[in-house]
Length: 380
Image: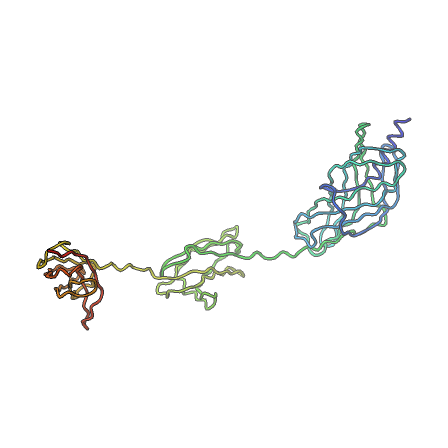
């Protein structure tokens, strides 16, 4: 008889502990509140227990994206059932089933983590608040309503090795407990990058990007730095293509004759477009440095020194001058740079004041310019 009473108490306790959650016990959340009549069937007693029970439900975040995982926060009021005997260490695994409406259909069931609680004798049983995860349907749109329709709780009493599954149906007085606004999906913005970012006129750069319209032609243009004044002729060739996954790839060739400066490449693909900055710059050809070589770097006064030069302007007169620092010292010679920019001549060095030999091109106005220099030591 005592065992039967204890089992009866366990059954009543199971009928009262009606909760849902997926995470640890959470603080109460701002919720929509309904107070329906619940009908709980205790299998061990083959008996129904009926009465009102408050259900607070909120879903966060709200608004939510379609297909997003959101948190259901639940707080239940006192159960209509009580236990005729005290129970300790009762392990409770709750669940709740919600009917979707409005912008979605179907049902979702959230099962909570197992928690442990004590049940007082002949006292209202109020489950702790909890939180759990549910998924907004990927096809949901607009406002989605959540209406509790069923509570199922599994109760295990370790001291009696007794497990009781208690379903509780909402029979009347229910309704929508929460409404979630589903965000309207935004179109994915295409991206575009150019590598290298600097090209020569007539040169090519590779373009890449994502979120483009799959298997749709991509048309490039060359625009100014602000993305305006676009000209399709600014791109003389391209190999652009968009794959089935929306990835753009290929290269574009900047038209020959494009002036140096900052530009953008604009790509249009259906209703989508994007730009990437590029710089057009002619390749700089280094100017060879004029150079002279002396046959001797240490001489006595009144000695001839052979001077050879290279990288001078072709077919140009070159003055060979002995200098002290930057001051000429009355030792002069001349040479003619050939078509290859080279020359060879001699200079008679007479003064010990000379410490360098210079070779300077002479233009038609007899302006000495474009100089090469080499050191020399003159001493007795």
